[in-house]
Image (tube, rainbow, N blue to C red; front, top):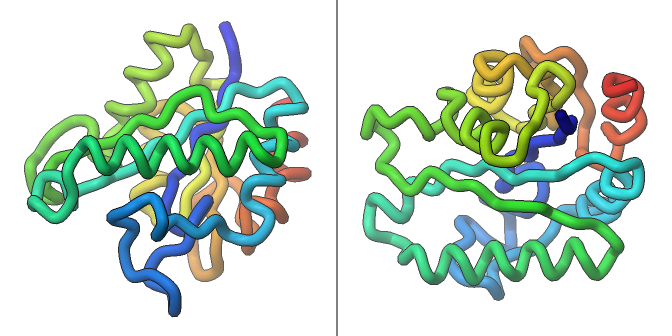
Length: 174
């Protein structure tokens, strides 16, 4: 079974609630955070399968169409590929925030589904995110966890950015 790195999208890979963009509702509103594509490239080159797992309640709330979300994710994959990285799949929860589904983080549904379909060993995988709901989803799935940002966290490790977390992530998965 393979080991994987699961990444939250907004706030880990791309800007959100920044001076340039509040929410990403179109591909041209996708601005990668500094070093994010390079971090994915380093993790890809180290032999890990990279997946993005993201809550996208804007779909369920009617702010964003699924076809537009797919275009955003295609753009994300293109930008990462330009730096030598590879995102194997982007999984998303399209449901409203209080829908009660199993896929919306802090539930582990997206991670478990990806693990089943891609033969992943969750105990040898990592979930990285910028909210405690990401960390909780990773723990529920049986993954090690990385918090991207500052402030209190229950994660196994913490770093200010995905780029700055790469060395620690690779050390956790040896």
